[in-house]
Every structure is written in structure tokens, then in C-alpha cells.
Length: 86
Image (spheres, rainbow, N blue to C red):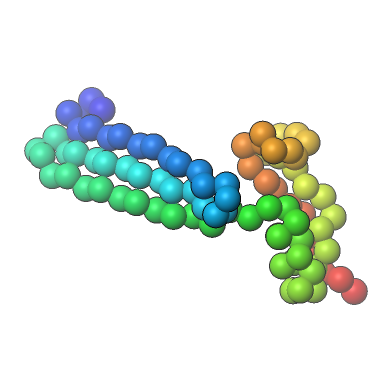
């Protein structure tokens, strides 16, 4: 960073447990150090569809990116369009 601060970030995915861990260390120019660890729950499309069904929703479409690309195991994200069941 241009002001002398340093930032390091890494992520680890635990596919068996269904979690992603994000670790970040940020050292400000004057030396203050902050560390963060965040655990995110990852859901499969099947898990999300089941939860939505329980909530009275039905999955209508799924995309793998903001450009409307096909969803698959290597997609950068899962975008789901769901509709309330009449």
C-alpha cells in the first residue's frame, strides 16, 4: 500500500465440512497490527433448494456469475432466483 501499510489475505476451503476460512493480517504504517479470521458456511445448490422449499420458495434459475454464466463446480459464485410458491 502506498502509505506503508501491509495487508496479507488467504482463504482455505474445507469441502468435507462445508466451510471457508478467510484469514487477514493488516499492519498499519505506524505498526498497529490487526488480525481477522472469518468462517463462512458454504451451501450446495441442493441444500439451498431444500431450505428454500421449506420456506415456501422454488428455485427458478441459477447462474454461476454476474454475467449470467452457467453454474457449475468451478463457478466463482452461485446466484439463485427463487419464487414464492403460490
